[in-house]
Length: 465
Image (tube, rainbow, N blue to C red; front, side):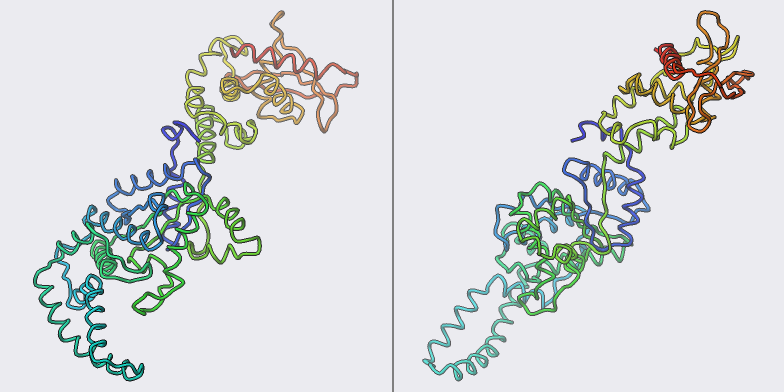
């Protein structure tokens, strides 16, 4: 868990990547470890979209953790309920939307199905037919005659109801339709979303949040409810919707938020190692998975801060810190480490009136403040010299060669990788603090050369506070 790091960490790069991902993917799995900032990232993305007049996106967000105690059919009712509430709040419902005769007819059937069925059963029973074939034929005839009577009832029903009443009634009391049914409320949602998107040049994004907060059994039960709309036709025998909710509700994108690696492990635990996980998950995303990690964003941001505060390039800063070290720290500590760095070596001079180049010294101060040990820094600097890293030698040799007792410039012995034992001799120190030097091969055996180099480096670090 990342504590208050989200206060500091910008996720602009990830937001740009996700924006492009939305443009090219209709169904998306946004994957990150539990506690690794998925919800924070989505909230930042939503905020940026809300503050950008040119952004095409509006969001409907569902939290299935609220559904896990319900039966499958009730889960879908709650989904419709949540979606309907949110499009009302977002102003997506068209005030001029009309309920057609067909829609009123369907709504009447849904809400009066038992009454119709009981009436029909009563009529069939009253004629005393026992032959199944004759009973079926007569039943068809009776149904046709009933259609006129039912239509009259629908017309009467429609006179008494307007859209507001219909929606209020649905929100107050859910009907008991099948999980697969493309019912009247679904049609109202879909029609209004499609109309809103077309008129306003917007894209409605349906986000299914916090799926990694579900216990495993409920996770797959709820995922199966969503996937059911791809696997089956609706109860009214309409064609199979093979594009999931993007066609079902008319939204442009659907985003499932989870830790995909963990979901894969749970899937094989539930269904066996031979079960087709990729085939199962392909219903929830197309092309590829969008992976996000606030820890990775944190490390990138920390490196960027250090680069900005030292003037060094990204490679030199990155290779100085072991992998994972920066992500283990709080951003508050990282930001604080940048404060008043040069105050610690303001009095240092490489020659009279000339201050040392500050870039590497800033890095060393920041590293010490972040908890990097002196021994580690000494080892890294010794490696720079062994590798004859001219960038580092130009900047550090004037400090290492200075004898604190005599204030003269000593030879600095180095065990190099390519030239054996050499000594470095400062030839000149420029006004920018950099030096020119000569490297001379040593024919004497200086077994203590590396030890003395490390002592000089340790002394220099002591001057940095």
